[in-house]
Image (cartoon, rainbow, N blue to C red; front, side, top):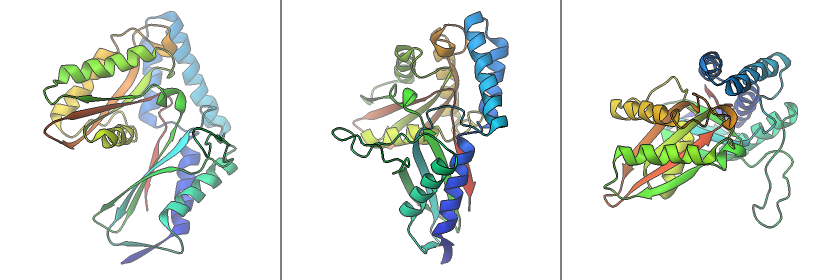
Length: 281
């Protein structure tokens, strides 16, 4: 077994959240700039220009891209040869989140009781943590500060197994269209297909940790990503709901085997500030 100190996980999580909340992935930033240049609707183009200026201001001043610095979502792929020492994974991740939001002066948005008390935990913990055991002697940590203006627009549907790709396209497109300007478009769309009711949503969330320039390795799903993107951009919602040509910057699909009697599909919407960062330790 290979030992990995819990403190190393904490430091990595802290660094990744401080990076993700300030610097947008290059491919997404470039997509926003390209959208601003080719948008034909003047009002939407102005909104996109403002978004570009905001990205620049955040990076140069080392300040959050968005005031909603999100709920901390963390995916950990842990090598089967790894033993975590001097602590445990969950505590180490939460300590990294705690330190990042303290030292980065990021808004803390997590409440301890979702229904009755709703008292702010004051350090943005606990994080939502997903773990998987994979071959090897490394730990891959992917973080996603998930804002809720877009999270609240997300949906899931349990299709019959007879559903077609056109049904999936229509569901995703209608989800984005009904959201209008609420999720701060142009959006990035994570789609999870298969698994169970709950796992489809996890797949959709995980899809948002992938760069929008990276297509699904399965050519059928890669083609579906493009078809959905084209359909969404024909809705006319546009940047910030002002209309125009660009409603979405990218569509990422993750899929998983499912039961013969069903076809779950989840749509996790992200605003144009599609923040994520990753490191292998």
